[in-house]
Image 1 (cartoon, rainbow, N blue to C red):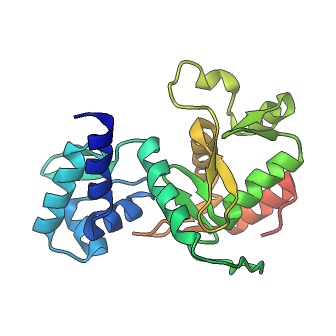
Image 2 (cartoon, rainbow, N blue to C red; image 1 turned 60 degrees about the vertical axis):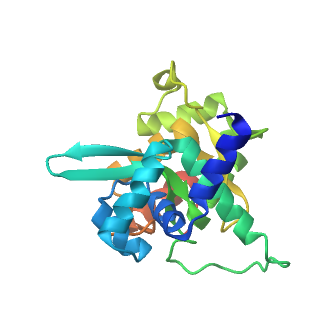
Image 3 (spheres, helix red, strand yellow; image 1 turned 45 degrees about the vertical axis):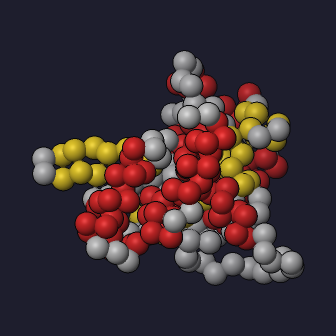
Length: 228
């Protein structure tokens, strides 16, 4: 199968309604059973299993077997970026962008995008890191300055820890709700994990939404001057 035929095949898989709903929900970076996927996709467990088998065969999702259970998740970050990119196309239908203070809850305010932070909060943090000279935009990535790596060292994140990994250290991921990029790549994933470790955010069950804890608000203000 050549590239064009494979593109057509994958596009058809992604654009089917049930599978599209599954992939949208798998963007939270977690793994789910076919039964759990059937709930979010509003279909039967048997139908969900059939759809997941097709996605598995096309190498769009992966599966881990634990005992009697099979847990499905997105294959890798490239798949996540593709799904997020489609979400950006959906937002282009708005002819006007009205700037207003976002509600301090919901997926538009704070959410996971596969394995990194997104939404208003994710974009706000990325732009603040830029303003402080820690990050600089360069094509589709962020360059991390010397003082940027020194700042990330507070989270025990070092440049040396990312050597010999095929995944980009940083990536600008265009946020579908904010229409501006947030920090992705290895650094974005490690940064979010460290913030989870410090109890700055809490996950909402069966949702990509994240809740900022009082400790998280306090620390983000102390370290970056961000008032949320």
